Length: 108
Length: 121
Image (tube, rainbow over all chains, first blue to last red; front, side, top):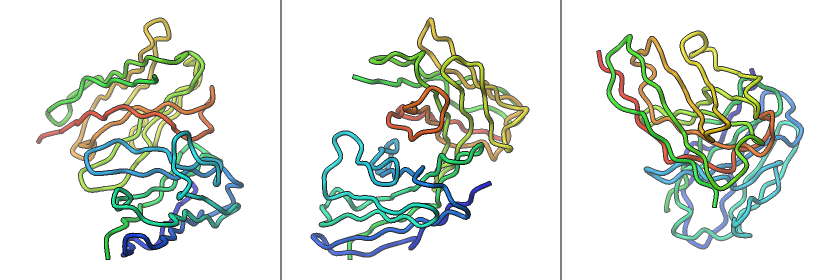
């Protein structure tokens, strides 16, 4: 099973600043990685797939990078609606499909 | 517009059964694999099961294998999850999700609204 590890668990950032979230896979997953945003009481929303491709309708301030075992989600200028939880997920080697434990982005 | 409308959650006693449904609309249902993903209260996302577009291939998390059964009716554009022998550890919000490939090796771009399953002792 591929273990996905996200860091940090909580990230404190001021509005307008940049946020950098990390996701590490326990073995290479090529670029088969997705990022999701989840707001309280809502279903997850796909932000990025293929490690770096924005999903339809996702603002350009969200970007993804990385391949192999190290991945990054960058939010270039945090807006109020961006303060929530983010998950990475691998779909390279499965079953099982595996998610990271999540990173909560909070207001500093 | 792609829509996934879930139903069937609720309160069930330990050892009981429940069947979740996910009615799809706005896309060619038979062309895409589907996932079930759950989230225990205050916890992260956990993959539960995947079914290929035709229903010919099914996959399960070890924690539900032998107790849960995923199925689909492409004539009714509906996905199901039959859950048996439920335990407290199955208490969660369950989401259905559509991936962008027929077999499942892709991200989930569309999600249902979620349905809460509570297993009481």
